[in-house]
Length: 362
Image 1 (cartoon, rainbow, N blue to C red):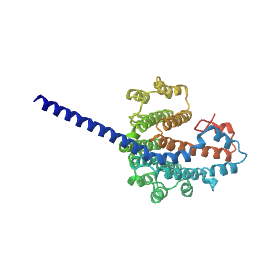
Image 2: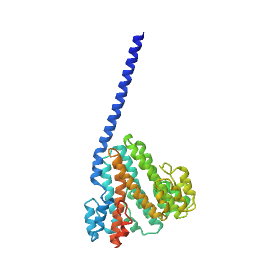
Image 3: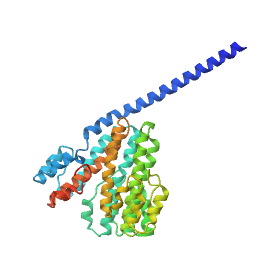
Image 4: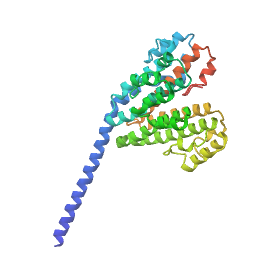
């Protein structure tokens, strides 16, 4: 009886050991497969690079004698600007072309995440049209300011631009991810609230897309999104306090890393921007407490975000770290190039242009 019990126990232990080893090996192989799925896209991402968020290269093009030299140089990196009247649109379209090339190589779960991030460019098109309509900009000029996106088709653009009033322009968003903006406009007639709603929709889309990510990609993505929510909330507070808007708590998002619910409530209820920023004491954002210009606050947050995603790309180089870095850095690279081209066109002092750049420029 004792011998049979011992044999059964030994068999049970052996089977458990085999199951544990198999589970370990399956987990190991899954991780290897995940790493393998990112190897090609990450190689492409590093090959494309983000040259114009780096001090050396930014200084190089800031020291060119003419805008034609700048255009010739950035063309080598994939930025094709043929019409200086539409330099900002052509820079953006070149950037999106590079993004799409890299995204096509990604595994499906990461591709969904990247496409959720790129929803922001559709949102930017909506913002441009709505601002222009609100300011009664001529239709032909509005068409020059925008381009088709993944969700904002030529037909939607035409509907919005040709609309006889703001309500009709908003109605065109009903079949897009931005339909929530219709209600916000109808209830507030406040374009600033609409723009914040657009930003919030993009962030929510990102948060939802991470649920389908491979386990290996979740850690860098969670870090990134938590920081992105914190930054969105601080920017929202800065904009709304400067504009003396009320009832802003409904515009804020949960899910940040360092800004707890009570801190957010304190920032929303603060009587001034200075009082709101005092709530950042004890966080990584405390350096903003002495900054009183909302534009500078946003610029410093963008610079901080770029530093952090560069760190993520190194810490998580075999998963989604490089993808996150690529999406953010290409966005800031395009912004830098637009600022530089505008500066050359308007003969702005080089130090003033430097002050607008996001990256490790001085």
